[in-house]
Length: 209
Image (cartoon, rainbow, N blue to C red; front, side):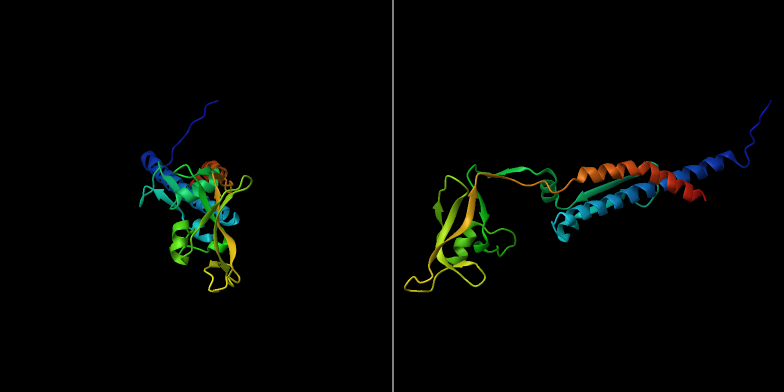
């Protein structure tokens, strides 16, 4: 039994069209995988209660720009890598100078510059002096002699008799603290990588139909 194969059409043009279809399929697949991973990471961040603002720092892009390629690639990253990375790894945090980490209580209020207030800023803002209280069990304290206002913030007492004056814990002092791991970005990244072959095949077939 003899069998033959006949090629209908110009083989060079057929291969060229197939190559273009492949370039488009790979480029589309990488772009879709990158966009999907960006959405998954953003969902993880908001689901962990870290806020939409941090989630929006996750960005994605595909390369090369402006043209399809069999070597297309996708990049997904965060514009706040230190913060996102810390929640992804759960690192042990120590003071840079080897002494104490200061954690403000509700009575300390917030910094006027945003973020956590420092002991120096708190003293300048309130005009009160902080006093160190060492404790063998539990965190040591920085306290101040003042009163709590209606918002629960420590302020200077206006009473000349000392009425309402109390010792208020303003900062907790700890040697180190471990940030809880709240994200698992690698899990979503692995799923995105595993999806690429299927996306390439699907886009290649769709492009030929």
